[in-house]
Each structure stands twice: as C-alpha cells, then as structure tokens.
Image (cartoon, rainbow, N blue to C red; front, top):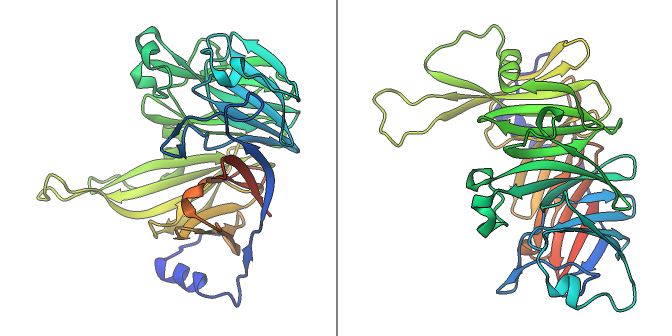
Amino acid sequence: MKHKLTLLSLLVLLNSCARFRVEKLNPDERFNIPIDRQADHLNFPEQKGLYYEIPGRLAVLDDWLVVSESSNMNVKIFKGNKLKTAIYSEAAPKSPATDDKPAKKDDFQKIYSKHLNIPGVLTAGKDDDFYVVNYIATKEAATNATTNDAESGGYYKILHFDIKGNFLQIIGRQGKMDHPFESILWMDTDDDNNLWVLYKYVEQLVLDRYKDGVLTYTVTQKECEDTLFAGEAVDGSSIRQCEEMYPFYNDDMILMIGRVDKLPEKKATPDSVYSFQHRVYKTKNTKNNKVKTIFDNMNDPEDYPYIPRSSNILVWKTAKLDRFKLAVYDTGGDLIKFLQIDLPGRRNNWRSTYATLSGDFYSLKVQNNSLQVVQWK
C-alpha cells in the first residue's frame, strides 16, 4: 500500500494520543565507570572540565561493555564496571593511565596488538564478539595521529575481536584487507551476526554485508536511486538522491530512503540553496529483489529517517532539546505508536543517544567524572 504522508496529517497524528499511544521509555543505568587517571578506569582527554573523544557509540554485550580511547590508542573491556581486558596498540604512547599507575587491587589482562591503531566507534556482535573502527594515520599524518579524517592522510579499517580480547580478523572494503574505507558512516550486526557497514566511497553511498569478513551483499548509491525513483521522469528542476540505506535486523530486506530537492531557479542569487520537497521510503528484498513502497511523499523535512528497529521503521523527530519522539511504522506504512525519550537533568551531560538494529536504545552520559551508559526500556 502506498502512503502519502502530508505535513498536516502528521501534525494531527502527533497532537492526538487518542488513537496512537505514546510509549515513554524509562532510563536504566547499565554501567557507571569513573573517568580518571587510574589504569582500570576510563581516561578521556579533558579541557576546562569537559571530557572529549568519547565515542558516540559503544558495544554492549549483556553485562559486558567495550569502550575505545582514541588518544591512548586502546580498547577497554569491562564486565559490569570492572575492567577485565585492555587491548593496547603497539604504537600507543606511554602514559600514566596505562603504565605509571597500574590498578592497585583489581588486576586485568593486557594485550598488545599490532593491528590496533586509533580506535573509534564500536558495535557488538552476537557471538561474544565486537567490531571497532580503526583509523590508520599515514606517515604524512603521523604528527597529528588523532585526526580521524581520511583526507588528512589516513584511512579506516574494521577490526574484529572476541570479548576476551583475542584478535579475529581485519575487514577492509569489499572484504579485501588491503582495501581501506574512506569514511564509515554506520555499522551494526543483524541476528545472523552479519556485519553491515554504510560508508562513502568516491563520494557515493555504499551498503555492504560481511560474513566472517567476506563480502556477501552490496548495494551502491546508483542502485538505490534506480530503485527509489524508477519510472520517474528526470527534469532539470529537481535533484533526486539516495539519502540512507539500512538493513532490517531479522528480515531479508534493506530500507532505502531517497530525498527530492528543488533546484534554485537560474535567476536566483549565488547563495541560493536547494529546497526540500519530499522523501521516498522503499524496501528491497535481498534474495528476490522484490521492491515495496512504504511512503512516496513524506514531506516534513524535520522527520528524519532512522535505522529500522527490529521489523519496524523509525522516523526520528526532536520535540525539544531534552525530548525525542520516534514514530514507529510497520512495513505497510501504518503508524503503530510513538516512542518518547526524555533526558533528565542537564542536557550538556548527555553525549549521544542511539538505537541498535536489535531494538535497544542507549544514551551516553558524563556526570560526576564518570561515564554512564543508560538503556531505555
């Protein structure tokens, strides 16, 4: 069924709770780890009381938490709030956090990896494993090794470890270890422990699926746009592009989201910008290539597309600085409910809020010199 969702109808839905319920998610603190100079805690750089270089996404595996420290070139694995294993790059600088002040009581395993360089965002696997984005600075960028920008003289690969810290494999672009990623935008695992990676290559979106490091499925931006805008006449007044691509957690489908913008008129001023028109949502079966239209005219520019949650589609809407609302739709385009997250306390303490493909919501919070990982239920 094709759905034309207008701005007016969406506002009516948002303002009406009689038919569509709002489910308020409650915070549950999963981890609370001090940030200080002790080796068995976390050590993030700090400037004028503000901690930075905290990854926007961590790996949570039941009661295990995996955190990366970019400047210290290490990955720390906690069980509960206790450090069990730290993986250090062989090139890691000597620092008080890792050498001069070892843990006083609770010893932990130390592993030195020749593969680890500058770790960043992480994601959890489904088999007591995790993945971490690894930045490798070239010789030209060695003097600024913490710059996470491929254009500055470096590139990215993905490292795969088990929860004990054992190195499993390197995943490069297209499953080839010698092919680096230029820019990794997102990654997560599905229920079969396939790793999905959304990235840009030569300024074009690509979504890949990897199984044990082997590329098993891929879709390019051109293929996405051909699917989204099939049969539409091409004119010079608008631009159509694939905006996002995500897999479903436990279905053989990917979600494609396209955006249509109106181009400035020829007589417009030089600083004229594109004018948003609408978005298109479609699903594509990864086995038989069957395409289904979910929305063909979602025209509120502030309804941001988000990753699927289990078998449902999420549309993110920021209600206030401390409140998020997510509309939950089924794959037929029917609205099921709204999810609401309210961030209590000072907004500046909250660093990031994100969902996993499996349906879990997490927020990272820095308060009282500690990193708190909150799960919303």
